[in-house]
Image 1 (cartoon, rainbow, N blue to C red):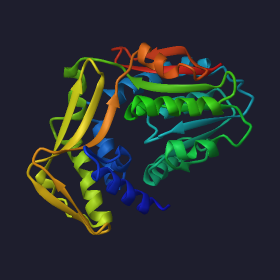
Image 2: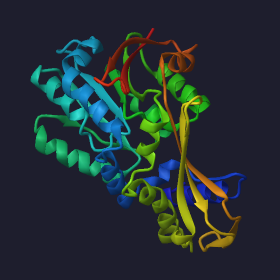
Image 3: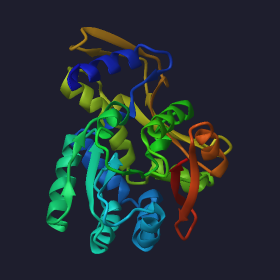
Length: 317
């Protein structure tokens, strides 16, 4: 199935449900990529700088936690590579220490992979880099075909965009591929108060709003939709006890939206929501529950100075 037909099917399926939803995967076209870069630079969006601090200040300790022989070539596979600004600190240290490795960035966005590949080729001319486009679940099998040892990077709290049952299934699949003592570096946003977390998904300048609404623009452009963006608003929420931030698009009025590629209309009631994203926040207990019966164990934990974010070293036993 082509990327276009998958998008079409997922939009049809999601808007036909009650409650309605569209997968957050579809945030990331070329416009969405640029908007997300702006989000990561927002003062409210603490996640990027918190994890960047960990990689910048603790890269040596992270590399030691890998327990890799510098002379034995391994594959450093990054799922959801994005712009690579955090990973570059790790790559720089690995190259300085003469580790033998190949870097394999994986991303659903071809645009992001092109940007990161060009950037790293300029920064690190000696870096062996082999980009791979695709969605995490779909490409995992292909990533483990070589016999070389592997380190998996899954940072940016991307795991938090999955429901817990999906996250557990995802971690189990990684565990099935990893060999004994191979590692997963898992970057997770930690549970905090509402006044810290909610502004990260509802910034004062409206970049997050534009990012969320771009989903509707993409449907209009690629699938012939007639969404009027003025009739929808960005509606995020966060409940501290649950530890899950959610993003919605709320219909301001009762309306019908037609999508020509489907030859189908969708009815919206006033204040009806389209669920577009979740962002789960974690602690050791929540992560431990996800890892139960996977043969994966927490072996180390790196924190930023404010203890907002954690990069866990997870080892296959």
